[in-house]
Length: 384
Image (cartoon, rainbow, N blue to C red; front, side, top):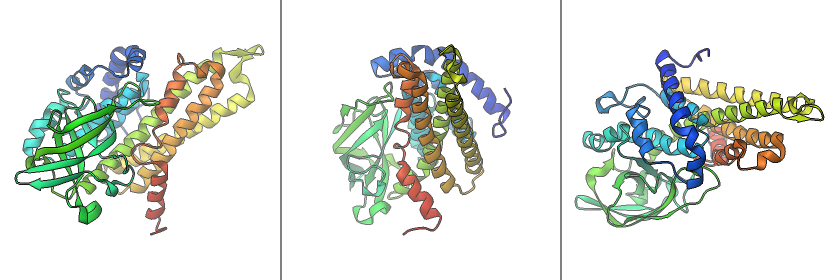
């Protein structure tokens, strides 16, 4: 397979090892994990041992010291896992929970959480979304009040991926409510801290193999040393993390759409209707032409934006464009693939329905399509 212009040789070597692992250690067990509602916690350790979390993280703590392209490769290959819940759980830990520690954590926090996190020995989660504050991060209500050498945290979080099983949570809190979004901090809360509980494990349409939780904080006392970066700088940390998260979600959606397309193309060549392959009918050929065009357009937009991102160029508008176009088209493509499968596409034994269910969250999570369009419009100089 010809190497894409975006990737270097080390990224393709990483791709080969990831693909082998997914094919042998993940995909064969996807149905079992989906039925059970979670994948084995030991999968984090296995991924850590093979260096799958290490690519873009600092060498002094066990990383490779590379860039975001390792995340891209990992996301693309996990599209072949047959369970986006696995991709969500591993990706959240490795590429959303660990980077803030690398970027903003003290040496002590990096030793305590980042190094074992890279090895997959502990699992992380990010607690931002609340029952009344999703896309509006500045509207969160969870508070952390300073009491001597501790913060006392009260509040609730919801839709937290890895929330049930995580060993530590990076929790967004209001440390100065009078300052609005400028009064937010991120504080690390360990599993088992008195007053911190998992209210419930949520039952979801898709991502069935990942754990998603509601969290409760009642007078949770956390050492001041667990503060991530500077106090009241959390909003900017979160926005920095959103850039990578949204771009990673877009890349994953492109890969999922490609996988769904490939499955359906094979089916269309084999399934016979009125004496000939169903793909030979013009109406179906045109559907495949449309889908492939959307996939390639989304991929090229994402790869261009990744190039800007890894080279430190301004690309907030492009990231929002990727998030909208790639994630929405993946849902549309999966829906078309179900239609092309006919009644079989509606059956749980066929993977296309699972891809649709798993992709349906993509235009919602990490900032809805509506929020992304607002970002694009404002960066064009439109509106307030």
